[in-house]
Image (tube, rainbow, N blue to C red):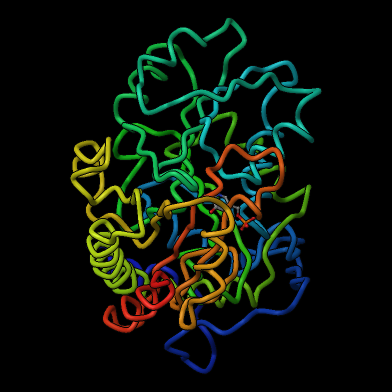
Length: 372
Ligand SMILES: *Cc1c(COP(=O)(O)O)cnc(C)c1O
């Protein structure tokens, strides 16, 4: 079946006495045992599994061409489950332009148990020089946050395979609709479902999807069930509801993202636009090869420095000045001030999450904010 159909049907697992067309929310934390001690309903205790979570995991696994999914209470806990599953003393290779929260996690929480190199992954051959005897994982993020760098997933997968390394891809900016990391050779896909999957800025969540059943995957499942950083049944319900329209929302984000990028690229107050759909983007060719659309995330450099950038984000009216991304409403932020004093993000960089408002209204708003 095609993704649009999977998104609407694959999560409808539960049959009810009242013949509901959509699944109800199962709030019960515990489930009845049979006379022989078994659980014929398929669930025992809600931290271990819950009907709404099983539905969510099924539809996400199918959308990503995976074997199974593990849903977590946030994107950060999804990533953390994978880092926790690695043997202490392992070495991992991560991108230099990495989601800030993960970089902090690796530097603050895992600095004593894991060895980490942050490198430029836009050139896959770069990786070879960094592989050590104890290297176990290559973590990529494409498109990356906030510079929209593109990593060639198939090329890095080849390097990972030939050295027996696990390849994990943070595919949050692409959503499950715009690229298929597993089909390109990745072992594990990660999403912050807080972003496009949720799509309405009202639910926190994260997910890992595995290409196949492996020892590492069993460990991750154990961390999910015994560690317990799981999403609530209501969160799962909201995500399942959002997924039904994900493909159509992504089409809108791609159309608006491209139109705004093309408009801003010609704007005299802007020196650079980072958007993988532009032919000026250094990895545009790879993006065109591995993505079916370029999404709704873009970053711009305004003429001047931090003050000029802050002026713009304070002057827009329709774009909400807030962090996060992937919702129906457009968001804008001065990224360096979110990331703090040790950030390498340019001071004149503004990150934009293009929503689903009419593009004419978005362009009119940003134009008035950019005018002196
Ligand atoms: C937001 C985000 C995360 C973290 O997800 P949370 O749901 O905020 O914990 C990870 N990676 C990327 C690319 C993100 O944008």
